[in-house]
Amino acid sequence: MKLSSLLKTGVLAAGISLLTLQPVLAQEQVVVVGWGGVWQDAYRKALFEPFSKATGIKVIEEEFGGEYSKITSQAEAGKVVWDLAAFESPQVIQGCDEGLFEKLNWDALGGRDKQITYAAHDCGIASDIWSTVMAWDGDKIKDGPKSWADFWDVNKFPGKRSGYKDARIMIEIALMADGVKKEEIYDVLKSPEGYDRAFKKLDELKPHIIWAESAADGMQRLLAGDVAMVVNFNARVTGAARENKRNLVIGWGNGFWVGTDFWVKIAKGPNPGPAEKMLEFYSKPETQAELVKYLTYGVPTLAAYDLMPAETKDSLPTAPDKAAQAAVYSDAYWVENQAAATERFNTWAAK
Image (tube, rainbow, N blue to C red; front, side, top):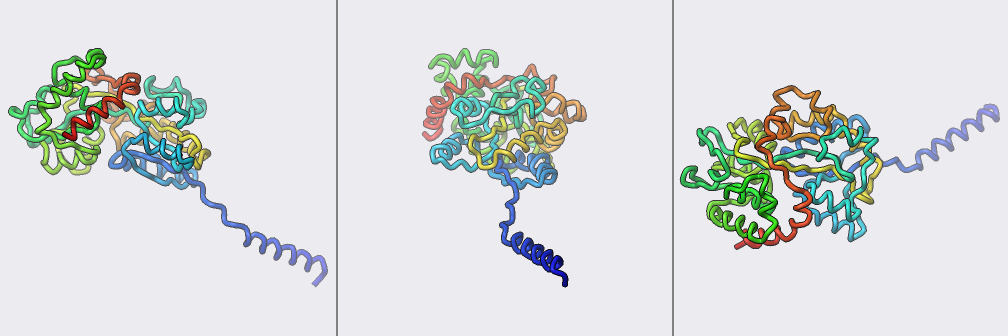
């Protein structure tokens, strides 16, 4: 064999040896934290799996109940393990102010002006626009309640109630049941007497309440017949009805509340690049139009609604015909008052 051939062979062999010594590059990944249940299932189908297929990035899913303390403890320990999480809007405002969440590049997300106004934040793009509703089994209650006062009327509508263990939700519902108009809720809550009024109303129903620690817990109780009515989230109700082939009815006309969860990018998360790519993938109108096939919450990007069938669009809490019944949670109010309200509520619920 010629010297040149030997040299080439040697170099090639050495190259192969060096290659075999190189560590295999780890697959890119992103750690995403959601709300579990039908919410998580919908995002898996519409976002997590399509994103992973399109980019090759592995999606590691975790679930939580919106606990802000879980991210503060990570930050305090100097070991942040989450990349993206879906927090409620008051926590998004707080986390953005405290530097726990990064400000988003809205140019990369299609433009902030292309979103529903309250669904875009400096540090978040709405993961869902949800609504708190009352619901019941239409096969068991033929002529359902017509107001939140009826939710309290256990003589007219016998049976236990599933209450959602959240101060903000239950305090506002109690005031509505006591005759406060949705436009006047925050005026009433400006004074201690307003809270006293809410808790006095809650006292009336307390013996008939079975508390739900999560949305899934409340729906399971309704499906099992443990409760006659629930306070829950609209997509949880429609998802449970579809999955279990049950006639679950939402009392839209009785009044409901609209709130927003946001995808946030965690500051100092372990995989910032993949996290940005996932946010960009989610911001596409096509992704959001796919999402509402599985989860009947509103989505932020206006162009997504043009891709939805009329029937789907009409089932969302953001549908125009529902606006008159909707009360919008005041993020500014609850950022300032939720901690104190929660402490009082938890003490009351534990008695």
